[in-house]
Length: 95
Length: 484
Image (cartoon, rainbow over all chains, first blue to last red; front, side, top):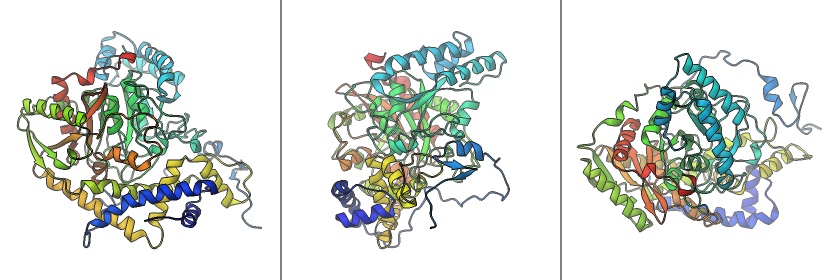
């Protein structure tokens, strides 16, 4: 499978990556090479094979719905790029 | 002191031959002297190490020491360490001071181990040569122009160069075993679920597993003893008793049935590496083991399936790095989308972006069945191959890597060639099995690793099988001349 520049730009948008225009051809080339490698899977018939999402056949463990963590907001916000009055700041979302 | 194994250091500390503070100072001095050549450490935590060493000495004086109390180790910079930068080899986390400890770090701290620092690694553990690190490549102590392997290359180089007697690593597709092989040390990737992933920065969650890297199987047993166990904070942690790994080491190997997969000895395997592996198998026969030919027919599909599953999981896991709550944020974002896309593009390196893009593509509408679902079906076939094999044999053996360490820069611009260096290790992660690499000799002055693959939760057996070989050979005791 070969990806063109427009497809790379679309995937980059979905992945929220601002890829520079001049880097798009290189990504198109290397992503196409990876997809070619991956295509080898097509040579094998897998109809009826149960997909394996996880190495151990285990049920998802659930915990009781009760508070187990102490409030550490100040510690966590100390490593944030921008905060004010206990809130995380981002550019204005609603005009 | 630096040339002693963890087992020997533990005995020396117990006998009072030296204190943990003396030992820690000696190793910190070695790091200061030698690491500029290797770049194995991203962060050295000298003050914290000395405080931990003094605490360990005090604990010993109170008669409360365990086997790891006062033993210095290094942590791969993927494990969160409270109050210490945890970069994961990435610019996006360059200034991230973790606000908590990973379970693995907490457990080793509780055992009294001393943390010397955080080791270099491929960015977000994506790489097989340590060249994708934001902090620059690590060099192989056996030949400084060669790679140490990856992604746990800093841990492997630090142990091989005697800067630390042991270190933690993580393995998603071979990231403990391949660098262990290329640096001539011993490393074990436990069964998925054996070691807690809590606080271990996620790459591909259904494949990631932490484990120890050290010079001998005995040292790996000592470290794994402290690292393994159930953790309610990791929803995939397995609630199963941890056996006494060290006690199992002495079991004789007579009657051991070793499976040799024909697919691991064919085209693509370097002939000098093959010769070293053959010699190791001869030693095993001498120890009373029997070798039988087996087949893992879907082996060649492991890399294709992995390069769908791992990128798919990584594209989802790395979505959390958005420049809002922690990590790198771009300057003057115009709006929220600009903040996300530029922070991520500036923060992630090329290989990480490549894998995020592949994963995003594989999970996107219209392609999910052909790629992601197909890869999961292949994963089942690969896992079934191993199930059938373990009905007949006790362990599987083969080369860890098809070649010895390659030159820095040799494969960095060719992702596909780089990916092929994990051809013998990736299937083990897809199945979730334990795998171990041990030093088996040299080719062209560079280390060759023998890979041991075991059935689920057979870490005990793998460490035993490796230890018995290490009683008969001295490859694991060899030190690179420049760092002896």
